[in-house]
Image 1 (cartoon, rainbow, N blue to C red):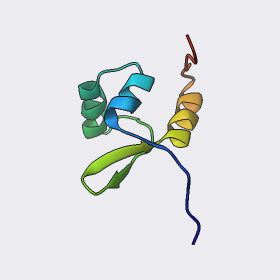
Image 2: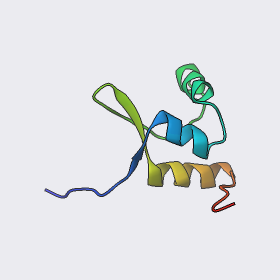
Image 3: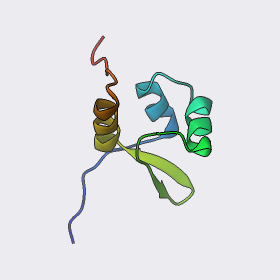
Length: 67
């Protein structure tokens, strides 16, 4: 069995990276708009960090690192 060291982000953390409010992120998810991949673990929806960054790159989004 292989254990993944993947980091998972909460709605709050993902929203901050996407420069949007948590409510806006939840609304877009509910409406079925294009959003980064996520997984449901228990009652929580989490976003794999590597997948979120890959999705941003595919969308042409710019991620400001260290600014």
